[in-house]
Length: 193
Image (cartoon, rainbow, N blue to C red; front, side, top):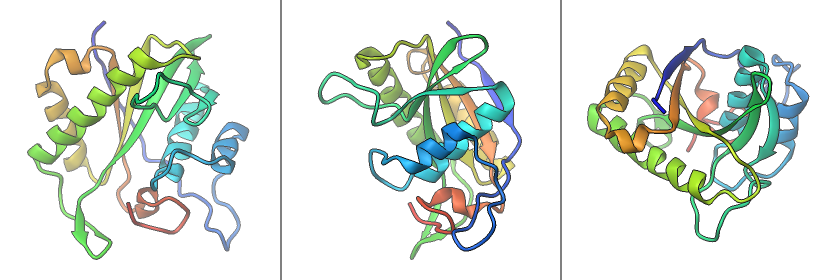
């Protein structure tokens, strides 16, 4: 199988905990937000990733990362969804963000940073595909949230430069989040990793 690249427009902002929600979350995205994830600060970016796939491609959530089961010690996938009349995809979500220190975000992603991020994520995706026990998919999507068009371009160039064995079964989807720093935190209104 060959790898593919896709672009998607940035999503609308999420609800702030003290205001009227600005996103009408699908029931599947709301379910993701209501369940624990495997840790870290990725819950919001994962739910928004699903919401975007649901709106753009009619995705339906099959399993969250805590519902997917693997052989012990495996890397994991963030969620599984069904699109296009039954095609099951594994989806791994990451945020390509440059930290300036003291919790501040900013700066552009350099080639080496993009290459390392993509190499690490794609290697993990290949491992999770080999070790998944309770779901089968033919492809995975690596959904990368980027802070700018420049960063998205850097990610795409570095993706193309990666060895084929890393890209073999994964579609790269980059979404630009310029001005939407909340995507880089775990809950609404935070910007930390």
